[in-house]
Length: 434
Image 1 (cartoon, rainbow, N blue to C red):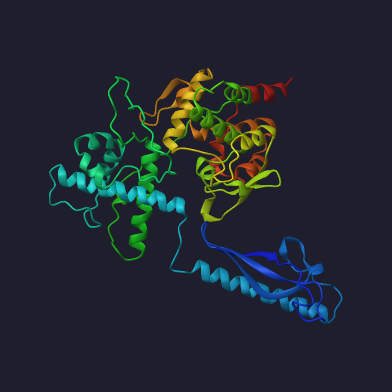
Image 2: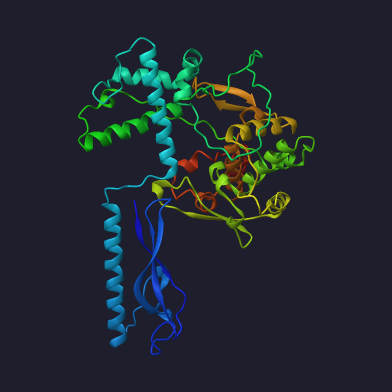
């Protein structure tokens, strides 16, 4: 969970801050990463001559025997003991802190289970109450079916969703606007708040999270019942990652959308995502303070095991121009944006207007069958991150270099889902045989 071995050196002290006999010393600071949201910096009480700072925050110990060597060895031992104690306290603490992203995922699961409980009561099981004791493989299968098709439950029992809404997103406050109704393929109005269909990957991920919770309750003595022992969670499968080329990105950016300012704004945000590579969840957090020395810096929300990694991506001319276009220091965020749903809807429309309609093959997560669709129908905010990674990887073909820009660790399984070996790369590889 936590790390306490990341040392930082405090500013040099002056003679007014410390004894006149000690010059140019600085205090070693410890930066503790308990979770993504809990990061602390504390002074160690250990002071060191700046010339004795070594690589990787170590202390340089002179070879020649003497008083200085003995003092430095003692300081190194104290520092090691201090970091060991802090790490032990963090890692053995009973108050483990989950990242905000994981907490959000668990809140989604909790609301789903509440809705399932109410659905069972309303559909004939008045005495039903979801509990550890009555969880069975058959009940898990019913929960799985419920997660796949909440739309039909919503249409039959909309009052359930008033009590436990499908979405609990907190969007940035913007002036209320009258939006036209959303229509289905048969021009029927879709009710507000209707659940979207979930694919196998999403349902499997939710059930995996539920299983982790059940195993935790067993380990901590809340129950001995493990219904997952005889229940198989569906496999998570990913299709070939779809991304746009640099030429298509430029075609999108150059399309005149001036007659629809909101659409133009969301298009520009998508393009800068393609140039920096951050997730939309990171985008929402960014401010003008995120721009440091002509590069954008952020701590990725997708960092594994809650160990924050600071990602630094230099800005190119196009990115700088787009940031300047929307410069407004009175706004908390770097860009004006809408909810994720509106953002994705606008991206699809911007793609359509730009003529980005080439046919691509994707994996339908409901049927697990390959289907062909025009590019604009599958466009989404996450395609920008795939575009950033895919186009750079196509040039350098080094996952470690690309990972340094995308926050993926060396050997990351997730990284493979963002890149693909396209036809141009295959032709280049075959060319090596000539």
